[in-house]
Image 1 (spheres, rainbow, N blue to C red):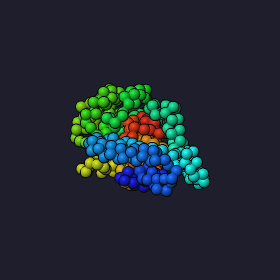
Image 2 (tube, helix red, strand yellow):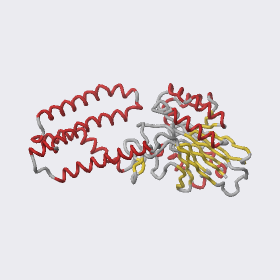
Image 3 (cartoon, rainbow, N blue to C red):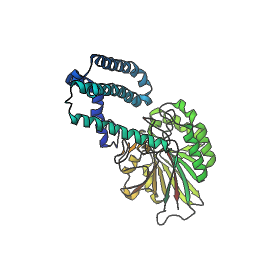
Image 4 (cartoon, helix red, strand yellow):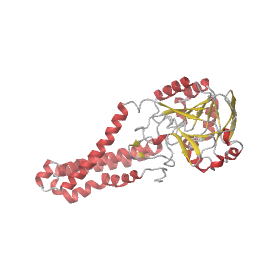
Length: 377
């Protein structure tokens, strides 16, 4: 499902709209229907809080809009302030004081309020457990083992380290970069691949990751494609940054990976945000020996199954970044069948990394950042 421009949205997210309306306007409905239970002092406090929140949001919006990376957090903060005021009013209406003025309060409303509180408490608990177990603090190593297709050129195994989605400039912990470097060094890859989205919105944030890429280039040859955020900013400048730091950008281009592992072709596609034609036509030459690197896994679904590469390596989704047990990713930003790890969809192998950084919100829930290490034997 696509919602407000976001692809792969869970149907659970449809609850956001009535919840947002309840947070903003629910207090006024409560005042109208249960005003007798609410003291004048509490009523005035709510109206003051609502008015100040609305005024602050109107004044701050033009400033926040200039820094688009904080826009989602801004709106969620505003809704949280409205919601806190409404919950305070709800407590006053149905708390001990409200019950004393109207002892026949409906049990079903109490049950509903308790259910909402329980749901919120469950979400907070999952977030707390996630942080306590270190998943939000440690970079995970994801291992994928693949077999060559019949008729492939023999050789020793090819070892590939794959990372993506740094989103520098948006709460990218330097500890993630050092952990990722340690995982890659220990794996001893033959090649390192980067799946795009180096920065969030500002080229000045490249200073945060310059040393990281230079370090990777000292471990093994590094190849990169550009992501949608790179395309939003300046794709030519991003490609120049990679070349300056020992990384080879691939923009609809192919390169040969030849060594003791035999022969493979690495093809890097342009992201959907770039309108110029890319190298999809090259897939027909030798798909059994081709590794496809592309930022958005949605692009892979358009490739005919008979033309599918040995494996397609993609980022973009962050693994959903926030996953709820039983519901999966709240926003997947791709076909919801595509998850972090190895996917077999419509005759295609799609290896997706959860990325290293954040986007939208600096939160990961049951979806730690990772380095994906592949062994093709």
